[in-house]
Image 1: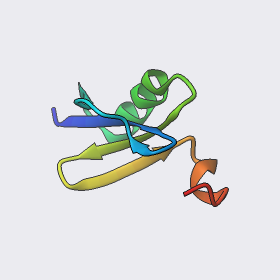
Image 2: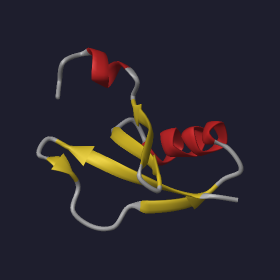
Image 3: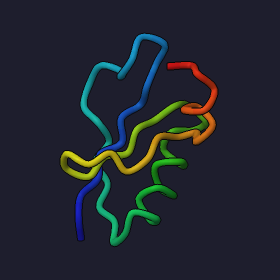
Image 4: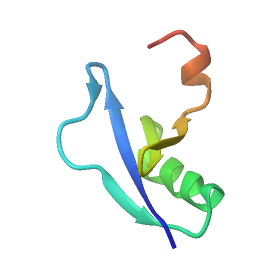
Amino acid sequence: MPDYKVYLIGDEGRSPGLPEIITCSSDQEAASKAVDLSNGRVAELWQDMRLVAIFPKDYILSGSR
C-alpha cells in the first residue's frame, strides 16, 4: 500500500514541521483520511511527487491562494 503525505496549510503557506504520513490502498481512501486529519483546515494530499488533492475543494476556486 502506498504512503501519502498530508500537509496542513496556514495563512503563510505550509505549516512548519513534518507532514502527517498515512498508508492507504487508494487515492479515495487517502483523501477521506486527509479530510479527517485536516479538521476543517486547508490541506494538501501528496503521493510522492504527485499532488492528489487540496482540501477543502472550494479553496482552489475561491481565489484565496
